[in-house]
Image 1 (spheres, rainbow, N blue to C red):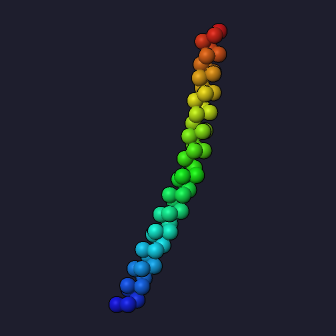
Image 2: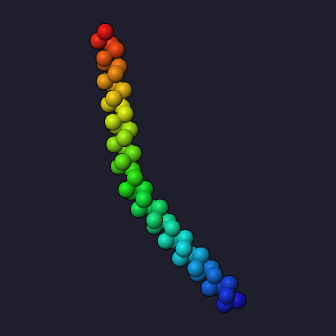
Length: 54
């Protein structure tokens, strides 16, 4: 019984650690993705304006 309980404790701790890493990674990646999307949007808008100007 103690071995199963010990294994469960390790699984819970590992899950918390992995969840924390994923949360931190998302917090770091989110601004980069947002900036990339904004840049692409700006470039598309500039191309549309260039086409409309012709």
